[in-house]
Amino acid sequence: MLDNKPFYIGDIEVFGGENKRINLKLPKLYNTPANLPIHIFRGKKEGTTVFVSAAVHGDELNGVEIIRRLRKLNILKRLRGTLILVPIVNIYGIMTLSRYMPDRRDLNRSFPGSQKGSLASRVAKIFFDEVVSKCDFGIDLHTASIHKSNLPQIRTDINNEFSFGLAKAFEAPVILHSELRDGSLRAVSQEKNIPILLYEAGEALRFDETSIRIGVKGIVNILREVKMLPSTMSNKTKRLPIVTKSSQWIRSTHSGMLRTIKALGDTVERDETIAFIDDPLEDISFEIKSTFDGVIIGKSEIPLVQEGDAVFHIGRFKNLETAETKIEYFSEDAIEQSEFVELNKEEVIE
Ligand SMILES: [Zn+2]
Image (cartoon, rainbow, N blue to C red; front, side, top):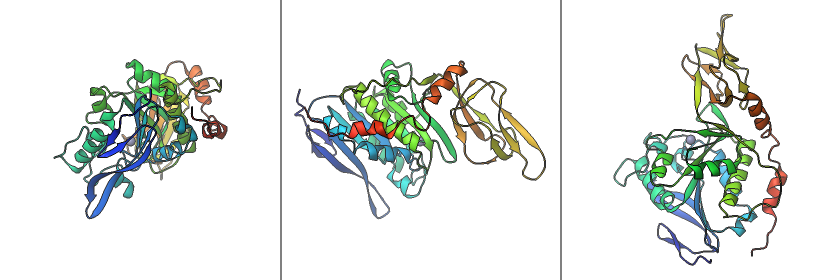
């Protein structure tokens, strides 16, 4: 079916077959005008409506690059339905290299927002009402917080069959079932029956090429899964992720210099040493051990630690041999440039 109904963002009309760049007005930053930049792609044919957002935390940049690469793919010419890309949600945070809003609030704890609330709450309301609430589901791109890094992973509610299916289609190395947090985009959207997948990969204020490639490819995989893009001709075997139902941060037992001996994606056994805390002046070291079997999905990147600091994020997983084989799949060259060439071939629009 041809899609003749206009789609509205703000007072801008977008018809089937049109692509538009929209600047949605936000509260000014003092005397500087501020806008929420949005790219909207509408296929000629009816289909699902999906948003992809990044930099809800202003210092998390991998997603900005993932969206930049995504919107240049020729395969989008074959889109069915509506794809809304919001590369920088916290446009204030990105200016100051900060996770937070200028009012020091976390935008991802300010949903669904209110017109009369704080600055963060007002921006949350505009983004939620104008984008999120008009979609069937969304993909929100994040990285670890400052001085930490994450193994590429999808976080979602694995008890929701639709979300779990999408999470598997994404083909990130790990799927982590994660609890909802009050005021987060994911919690509020779920209440309105709009499932959200969170892609968490890499570090704040850094680009990570592997995370970016897995991200771009993952979004394309999902658009294929929901028939917004034609299915692939390649018969490459699907990458099967590790699914972990819970995770826990291992904290530093002492203050000092952190010397890690395990990397992201490594498997660890219960009681295995994962790092040392060295005293910088005396010849004293303390071991940090894992308290359960699992896979390292996040870690601290700063060698200075205080007692109690979170050092390693471990996803619980029993069969470590299987985990190792699966993770190997996602090594540096797991997603080769050649896979993107296919997406960029000029394709005839039917
Ligand atoms: Zn984040």
